[in-house]
Image (cartoon, rainbow, N blue to C red; front, side, top):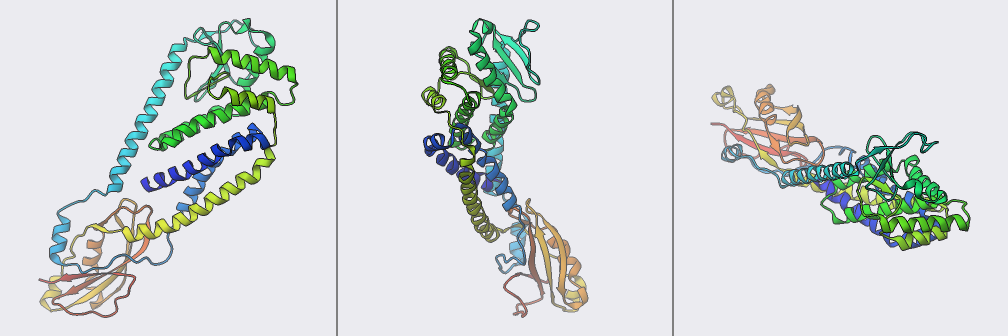
Length: 405
């Protein structure tokens, strides 16, 4: 889990930097709306990474082989090791929980300070699917909510000229109808997942800025110069008055990147289809890197799998008394928690005399946690009364010697 998070943090950072560096060019040639849609590449590539890493490792897998003595078994069975990956996972989990709780508390505190009031009856008509309230704490319309959207208007909203008022309402309703609250919630979830990456926080601000520019472009689509001027004037006035901000809210104004938003209002270009080949190129590149990374990661994770605890098989008393030796070859799987599963005897000697002892011991072994379940592992347990060389051991199996008393 932790390796996937760190790997995806690098991919997200690379995509964010590409989108940011190319922002001016993309907005100029495709429009703000198309540029905003390009940000959907990030959740798509996260989904692709999960799809790629979900593929299971085929065929037989080789792990490190070594001689297993009774003294070594005793030492290993008396201690349990905590892999570093587990420690990092708990640190990440604690950080994600703290970030999520902090964002929720800030959202709740911000919502409480608004002191929402009911609007006079028939104050606004023609708005469906969203609850409309008013607040004395705001100077600009604001849209917020996780489950249900609430449009919050300042108490002096109806003192604003009608033309500007209609544009402000249209701006917030574009956010609502386009599902921007849902996309913001997904972006906040991404913040919680990748809280340890500073670029993720910076990327969230860039995403929100792209969202506002796209909303401006949609509101002003096919508008004349007079309407654009009225919109820009209202935007400037509300930006200067706005003194509140929340990660979970969408607002008409905003002091950040005012110049770029005003230039975008003037530009008004909307060529969404031009962004399609750009999106496909970025997704193809990231998918290719994901596949290569997954293959390399599989090799590393297999090579890095090592036993944490082994239980020594009991040498059957009948075999000791009758001086019988033999071996058992078994296949098994290592689950993501390091436990052994799917134990199956593939070959044994002495009519299966050692099968039960070998199987019971193997089922209790513990390995370091792999990133995904490893199947078709092989091990050979040699039951020997003395030192001797065995034949028939292949390179794809682990060989363990158990000495009889």
